[in-house]
Amino acid sequence: MLSGKTLVLGVTGSIAIYKGADLASKLTQAGAKVEVIMTESAAQFVSPMTFRSVTNRPVVTSLWEMASEFSIEHVALADAADIIVIAPATANIIAKIAGGIADDSLTCTVLATKAPVVIAPAMHTNMYQNQVTQENIAKLKARGVTFVEPGYGRLASGGVGQGRLAEIETIIGTIKQVLGRNGDLAGKRIVVTAGGTREAIDPVRFIGNRSSGKMGYAVAEAARDRGAQVTLVTAPTALPDPTGIEVVHIQTALQMKEAVTKAVAGADALIMAAAVADYMPKSQAARKIKKAAAGPTLNLELIRTPDILTETRGNFLRIGFAAETEDLVEHAREELEKKQLHMVAANDVTAPDSGFEVDTNRITIITRDGKAEPLPLMTKRDVADRILDRVVGMFKATDSKSVTINVTKTVKNQGWFTIPVKGRALFPEAGHEITLLTEDGEIATNRDKDWNIGANLKPWFRKHPELKEDDKLHITVIKPMERYHIKIEIVK
Ligand SMILES: Cc1cc2nc3c(=O)[nH]c(=O)nc-3n(C[C@H](O)[C@H](O)[C@H](O)COP(=O)(O)O)c2cc1C
Image 1: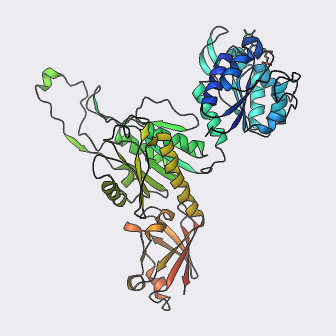
Image 2: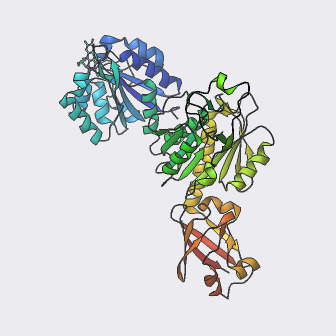
Image 3: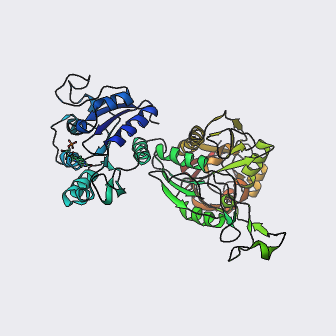
C-alpha cells in the first residue's frame, strides 16, 4: 500500500534521528518515494548523506540552497505529498507547527500542504509532559494531525520515562492506517480472528495447534489499510499487536467465542482465520499433573468446543477459513453449506509453502454461487487483499443490487421463497427478522434455515391472487444486511 506513494519525511534535531534513518530506509524498501526534509538542527546530528543514501533521493536541508529540485519552490513537496510524516519530532517543531510558523523548509511544507500529517514526537519526559507541549499537541490533534505516542523507557538524555520515539513498526502502521482512511472499506467494521487456541490440561500444559496467526493478522492489517475499523480477536501468537487495530487477547475456544460474540455487535463482517480447537479437555487439573501420580498412561477425556461460526448470529458477512489435508474444495463446500457462510478460503495445509507458520499461502476461494477460484501461491498479505476484494464486492452488491424470485407453485401456494444463491450475500443470517416493505405496508418476516423467507408472508400472498406462476418478485435491497429493509415489487 506504500508502493507508489510520495511520502515527505521531516526529520528534526532529536537524538532519536538515527531511528528516522531506519524509518526512511524501511519506507523506501516498501516502495514509497521518500522525500526527506531535514531541519538545520537535524543536520547537526546526522549528515544528509545518510538519508540520501537510504532513500536514493536528494534531501532538502534549507529553503535557500539549490541542491534539490524542490528547494526552489518551497511548496512543491507540499503539493506532491500523499502524506507528511515528522519522525522524530522535537518539542520545537511541534510548537512551531502549532503556532503556524514557517521559517524553514519543513514548517513551510507542513503549512502549505493539504496532505494528512503524522507526527511522532521524541524528547525528554519533562519536555513532553510540559503543559505547553501538551497544549500544542492537543491543538494539532484538534486540527486533524495524527500523533504516534512516544513510548516509555530509557531516554538518551538520561532517566526513564515517556518520550522515546515510538517503534518504527508502530509509525509505519499508523502511516498505512492514515493513508487507507478513505479506502474501499472505509466506514465498515470488521472482526477478524487469528491464532491457535490453547485448551488447558493443567496449569502448565495445553492442547494447541500449529497456527502462527500470520494469516489472520494479515487480514486484519489489510482491512485496516483499506479504511476498516478492525477488531482482532487473537489466540497467543509470536506477533506484535498491529497498530490502529483493537486487539483482544484470548487463550481458549470458549474465550474466543465470548470475545467474538461481543465484538460482532454492529459489525459488517466476521472473518474467522483462527484455528479454534475442536476439542478441549473435559476438566482441567488444578495442579500440574505429576508423572509419578499419573502412571505410565495418562488418559485425557476430550469434549467438543462450540463452533463459533455456526453459533455466532447476526447481520454480517461470515467468512471462514478451512484448513484441509484432503479433498480441499469438497470439504470447504460442505463447510460453507453447513455453517451457512458467505465465503470460505480453503487451504491445503499439507503443502510446505502454504498454511501454517509460513509467510505464503495458496488458497481456493469458494462462494455461495458454488464457484471455486484457486489462487496461485502468494504472500499472506496478498491473500488477505484478495479475500477483502471479494468482501468489498459483496458490500458493493448490497449497496446496489436486487434479487429476482421466480414465482413457482410452491412460492404461490405455500407463501415462502428461497433467496437465490447469487443474492445471498445481500441477506442476513438465517433466523433473523427482516422487514419487507410491500404496497400493503411493512411485513415483518423471519428468515428460517437455508435462506428461506416465509413466516408471516402467507396473508400477503393470499391478498395477491393475481400472482401467477412464472411471474417475478423483484426484491430491492433498501438497507442491506444490518437493516433488512426489502421492497417487493411484482414484475409481470
Ligand atoms: C544532544 C541533543 C539532543 C537533543 N534531543 C532532543 C530531543 O530528543 N527532542 C527534542 O525535542 N529536542 C532535542 N534537542 C533540542 C533540539 O535539538 C532543539 O530544540 C532544536 O532547536 C530543535 O530544532 P528543530 O526542531 O528545528 O529540529 C536536543 C539537543 C541536543 C543538543
